[in-house]
Every structure is written in structure tokens, then in C-alpha cells.
Amino acid sequence: MEVNMSFSNDMDDECEKLFRRLNPPRVVIDNEACKNATVIRVDSANKHGILLEVVQVLTDLNLIITKAYISSDGGWFMDVFNVTDPDGNKVTDEAILDYITKSLGPESCFISSMRSVGVKQSMDHTAIELTGSDRPGLLSEVSAVLTHLKCNVVNAEVWTHNMRAAAVMQVTDEETGSAIIDPEKLSRIKELLCNVLKGSNKSRGAKTVVSHGVTHTERRLHQMMFADRDYERANNDELDEKQRPNVSVVNWCEKDYSVVTITSKDRPKLLFDTVCTLTDMEYVVFHANIDAEGPEAHQEYYIKHIDGSPVKSEAERQRIIQCLEAAIERRVSENALFKGQLAIGFLGVLIYNLLGTADSMIAKAYLISFVF
Image 1: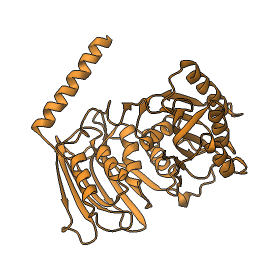
Image 2: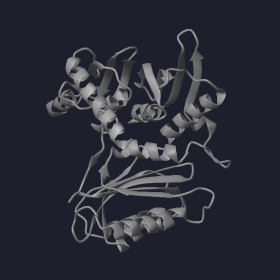
Image 3: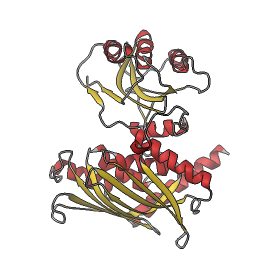
Image 4: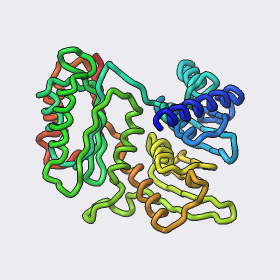
């Protein structure tokens, strides 16, 4: 059976490559069409997940998407994005423009199978994924365990939402400076970290995954928190209704679409967070209009489930609303960023000083990057 599945996957990939060669994507970047933004047009063969890959490329460059029109009804995908740099200016850096063209144009690989996009093996570091209950001092305890086991944290990002926490860490072995390959040590890391994450909360589980794979960190954090059901609000949820995104889902019976409308405070990476969640929930975006030129962002999506059906029930409608609210809320835009050449074990001291003595839970997502 495994041989048959492998053969089927290989055939799918070859068909995709052939289709792409016959229908290469086209990218047009125009700095004259709009007074205050760079206009990027992307045309290509349509495929589930392709919108997310395009948005991910733009977002990873820290570009701000102020407007977007998306149409992928049928076999062709046509997008128009108005983007600026983080300072609100047109994008004029030739290196960035060239990267966009290569990443989204005929030379790109973003149409390749979703089984492989953004996932590759790495012997440079070991990836550790953590999911558990948020509580005071959690990061300092995790750091203490890794320091005790002689693990050097190269990069870590932590998100919290609804009393749950998720983290993706890249660590190396202190002795070798590369990925941890000792099975006994890997097992010990999983065991100790899982115990830390469980804490005293017996009602919700904890999960630790260790691998040598490399994924898109923010995409993975969304998937982890979605799988952990962080969208299920606690009874004592203190977030004011007025602070929540305004999300509505209605069916457009004449066209057999479900229309998702979102109004929220604008912030960087908002479009990525929304599209990521719709994609992971297996909804296809056929049309969309995005307007984020002011302090508020307005998003409108015309969607169907991957099986071709619109939203079928009130329970499904509520789940979409809850998941999109969570996707927008779980990211905090004001990350703390640390870079520098640091000694082994310094991370534990740094995190303890930042969070270990705090009386409240982790209030924001901490991005900790160490450059050696």
C-alpha cells in the first residue's frame, strides 16, 4: 500500500511539473500604476494553497499589503496586491523586487506540492515543537531544561492565546554545534519538556515533537494552535467583545459561495494569518477583496470547502468565526527581538530575567533570534 501511495504522489508531482511548464506563472511589478504603493500582479495556474504561498512570500519580506484583489474561479489564479515597505513607501529595492519575481515567477517552486513546500531536512539544528498550558515562568522552565541537557537555542518563537502556549524552537547540541542525533538524548528532551508543559493542568494535554525538519515557523504555529483548539474560549475569557475582530459568515445561495467578512484593527501579517487559517481549514478562496489602507482592515472572502460545498450548518459557521478570531488574536505584532553572539546557556538567564519572575502569564509573543 505504501508503494502505491508513493507512486501516486510521484505521479501527482510530475503532473504538476508538466502543467506548470505548459502554464508558467507570470509576475508584473508596477511602480507607476498607484501613487502610494507598488502594484504586484500574479497570474498562474490555480491550485489549492497557492494564495497562501504568494501571501507568504510577500509577508516574509515584511511588506505591508494595503489592498488586494483575488480571483481564482476556474483553472486560473489572478491576484493584484498593493504593497509598501514597513515605512509606508513604495518598494524600490531592486534586490527585493528581483526576489519577488524569482519567487513567484516561472523560476519559482511555490506551485509545487503542498506536501513539500516549506519542509526540508536539516542537519544544522533540531526543531522542537511545544504545545501546552500557558502559565507564569513557563519559558524559564523550558529554557532551564534545555540548558541542563546542554542544548543551545538558536531561534525560538512563542505564541500564546486563550491560556494555551505554542513554541517552535531550533536547537543544537552544545558539544557538536549541529543537530541532536542521539536517540536517547532526544527521548529525554521530549520527556522532560512534556512534563514541564503539563504543569498542574490535567484538563488539557501537552505535546512535544522533535524532528530535523524545517518548516515555516509562523505557519507551523498557526497549525499547532489550531490543532490544540485554542479557538475554544474559556468561560472566564476577559477579552472585551469590542476588542475582538468582527467576523461574519453568510451563504450566497445564487452563486453557491459562503461569504466571509472580517473587520479588525489593521496590523502587519494580518492577511497571512487569515489566509493561513482558511487554507488549513480546507477552504478554497475563489474571490477576495482586501482594503487595509486605514487603521481598520476590511477583508471579504468568497469561499467553498475543498469538497466544493458552501458552509452547511450553523456549527460549521460558528467554527469558522471562532477560528478566524483566534488566528487574528493569537499573534501579537510587538515582538521582542534579540540578536547577538551569546554564550551557551545565556538564553536561560535572559529568559529568566525577562519572564521567570513575572507574576502574569506570557503577554506577548517572544521572538528570540541568535546569530553566530
